[in-house]
Image 1 (spheres, helix red, strand yellow):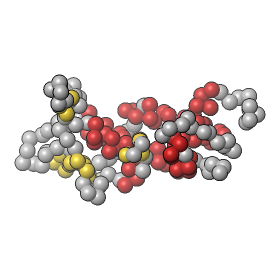
Image 2 (tube, rainbow, N blue to C red):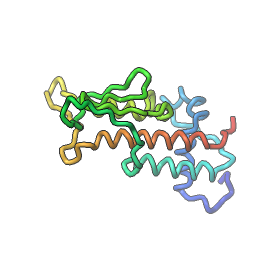
Image 3 (cartoon, rainbow, N blue to C red):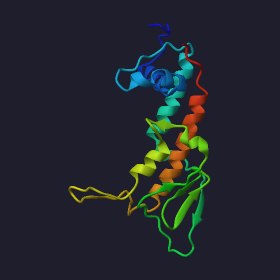
Length: 180
């Protein structure tokens, strides 16, 4: 074992790798390889820092629904009845507002929320794309993300994803440097 520490557990190794895979230098350096090869993992001088950061990242990514929602500003159209249903959300050009539906616009989205990326888009952009009313052309089956038992689910999820994104960026930015 390269780290010469018998107290390192399998979970420590997993969490360290999870943090390494989020490290901006790692993502940039191995970007092309990650699309077609297994990841190559560098030796990290501060293993414990990576293991601790990876454990926190894993926790907030797995338990994202337990995160507090980011405090967005709700702008409601008083000419329309209260409506929590989503058909298709849309970001403003400056990405500080999200048109949730005709009744509601969510404002105050911090630009840092877009720094945490899942592939080629941010987690928030993924939510906007996936949580919309869709009808399959071939089968005619309607995919409706709205929940009758929790009408505000998507609004709350949006705030939680922003919180997860901001916390992820904070953790990733605090990671120690990787060796070249």
